[in-house]
Length: 199
Ligand SMILES: [Zn+2]
Image 1 (tube, rainbow, N blue to C red):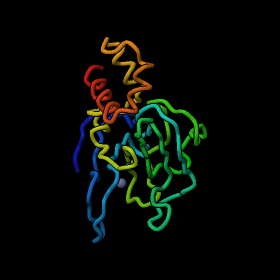
Image 2 (tube, rainbow, N blue to C red; image 1 turned 30 degrees about the horizontal axis):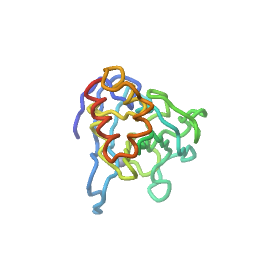
Image 3 (spheres, helix red, strand yellow; image 1 turned 60 degrees about the vertical axis):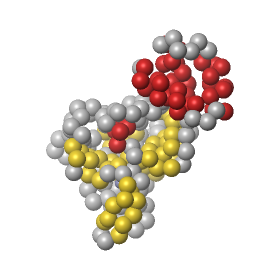
Image 4 (tube, rainbow, N blue to C red; image 1 turned 30 degrees about the vertical axis):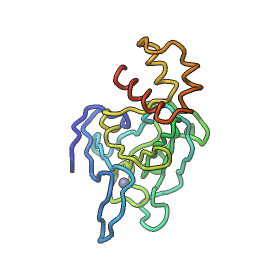
């Protein structure tokens, strides 16, 4: 169990320490080895209270499930969940949310903003205790979300990244780059890395 020891994390509303209970990558559970496509973390905020999960960045809700009432190791493995498309090929997924905790406003197609509440940490689906399975996908491939949970990496849309570059005087026409960058391999990534360093 690794402790991040952060007082703030971009996926939890309340301050407190966050513990990693299962990292991204290959793992063995009950004699079976498989790839764990997300990172499992817990944060307890007090007796009987479950931490509030918030959107890690702006985006559009692409999937919601809120009908799983408890633990289910056979079907409904993800439990209750919310998936958010952040643009630029980045998608975040939040599994095992507490039954009944996803706000009615979190529906497929709505826009959410960084910090918006999407539910409470829970113990639904293929889960052995209340935790959040945070899964990050880049162009359809699961990537390690841990650096994002620790705030070492951020998700930015091309638009928000270009706004940073403009503010810092690196570019003067975001509209031009918004059109051009997606057509050049690795350019959106380069722009994002620059924005991360500069902001
Ligand atoms: Zn997991």
